[in-house]
Image (cartoon, rainbow, N blue to C red; front, side, top):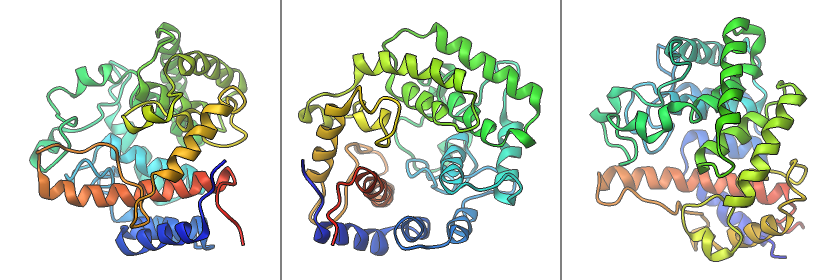
Length: 308
């Protein structure tokens, strides 16, 4: 079993502090240096628009300042991690945006707006092909968003919440056991929703267990590609599928430790190709800080960082 040395840990910390955004530095301070949640929220506020949605590159692969549902889900990932209450203005305005952009006739959220085409973006964020490319939005981003609506169910219309939750579980039942990776990750997020009834969590985990058996990477060489990593379905040692995928998770953790760069950072295993090269360099650096911080948290949670 490999561990991240204290020197390598400090190199990663230094990279985030020197190269990360204000948000990354605030998150680093919160998770590793007893920093305040308010500092994270102050940094997040810079990405929120007047309509309550988030943009401005919060999702690094979208450089538009306009609000998008995908960037707003990134904000809600942070709200969940920090345990931000429903009465916080950032949350309330974010919920207003999600309720406003909900397509009630189809019971989905369009993942990106047309404005993405007005600024540099990754090739997979093409507006014209987004609905087809994301399966009509039936899983991604809808499933993840439903989890956040349950997080804040006290201030979300009850009829809407029950209607879209019922639709999500009907969609879950219709899916084959072999699921698309991002769809599966969205269902993991929903299953990790504290406010979701246990019976519904159990239904999701049963499906995820089958899908992960078919799709999870089991060899280190697979992890160099864009694949379903074991850590995507087992995010902590006490996750429901931790025992089922114990060997795969151990392999994944060893692999991540080996992938740290000489600069202390972990880098994305994808790129924009030859599209918007200057903007990609900015996005790549933002991804490095984000991935590095995520890996540090995971390695800490699994006791893979040397102490002392």
